[in-house]
Image (cartoon, rainbow, N blue to C red; front, top):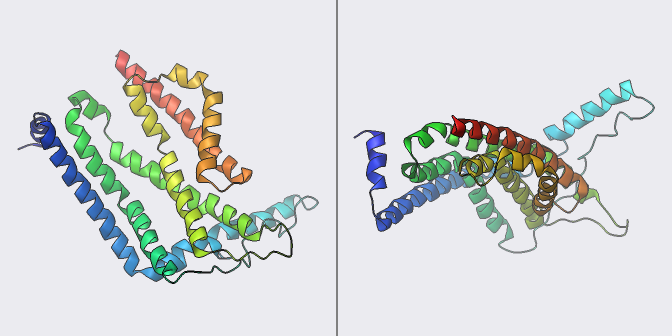
Length: 279
């Protein structure tokens, strides 16, 4: 039986049959996340020392690049920039754990989140397999590349957060003091919470063009509507950025910038969708 025939057969199934199919898609997705999480759980040093605590180390690639940038700028503009102005991320305070099960709990939770990121393309594949039978042949053809672009945008969001937003936010908060009388002794749960919120949040926000594509395809939005609503979109992006980032303006602006770029990409996508509908 061909793949197209299999899809046509699934279309004819009853509601309960569809629920059964959905259940197995969810089971396979959860299993993939579990396997990815277990692999990372076993490799604890890689997961924590290299990945999770990477943005807290002074030799993290982002800090090294900023330091090199500072040295280059100091040669071009010696009166404005010192060769160590952008050399940040050094001598950050150590993390602490205050509960008996805190480190083990963090190990499990971070492994699950990392497993989700690792298995995200497969989860999207399972989701796509479930909704594909409900699409017409032309819609299936037009939506080719859905898995690739959805996974790519999510990965770009995670990487953008991990290498740009997270290290700058971590440096800011671990060094910020209201007074020299108050020392920063951050907890492990606070550090991992910020890192997880940033990476997953940015990964999901970067799916904005995919969302716009389906909204335009269903006629909910148009390119003209999106273009005329740029100011509202800017406010919305700022609000979304405020939800996933720590409460500092700099991080919110860093997230809002790429989101507005993706919004403009979404307008171009909506225009292409409308042209195809007209044809």
